[in-house]
Amino acid sequence: MQAILLAAGEGTRMRPLTYHVPKPMARAGGKNLLEHNIDKLPAEVDELIIVVGYLAEQITNHFGSEYKGRKISYVRQKKLLGTAHALSLCQRHITGRFIVLMGDDMYGEDDIHVCLKHDWAWLVKKVRGKFTGGQIMYDDNDHVVAVNEGTHNVKEGFVGTNCFVLGPEYFRYEMQPIKGGKEFGLPQTVVLAAADFPIRIIEATGWHQVSDMEDLRRLHNFLSKGQ
Image (cartoon, rainbow, N blue to C red; front, top):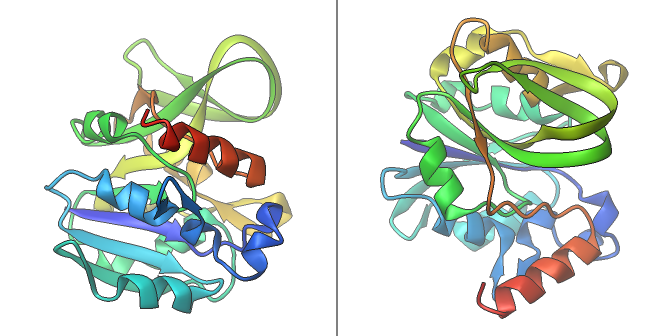
């Protein structure tokens, strides 16, 4: 099985660190973020596809063509046109069902295992109160039906973590524009497939979002305590 790690972004909210280091190579608890995520993948994932862009050579030089027995291929995103665009560049490498993860957050091993029990899955995080972003709507069978963008105030809801298990059929669907057409969003594109394929939502228990330096410090402290 293949895993795709999206690692092309500039990580502007983590400057000045990311002037010199791509965000997925930022270190916490003795490893960089990409290493943390790869090490949490189960044995059935035997091939990695890493989408690189900003400071790409630091990633390719570090990992090479193989990491701990897993073959690695690289796809370069020359223009940073969003997560759906990044994934679209991988289509010619896809051989079957695959998992997608952001290379600059950290995911939980148990969460990944649960997601992989389903043909299609979307790892989500429970939220309460006011937030801005995409609220994931789902039916009584915990299958995705829509993503509502905007500002929400909810007693309880879910937002995505950008971790998906998808079938190769995903590439049938047209990439959906976001940010006034400047980028193409992966969640917005995945939800189109929900009309044809049941996409199970899985509540995350071990996801750590890394948006800025304070998030990275919190993650480092968490890992240093052996949790």
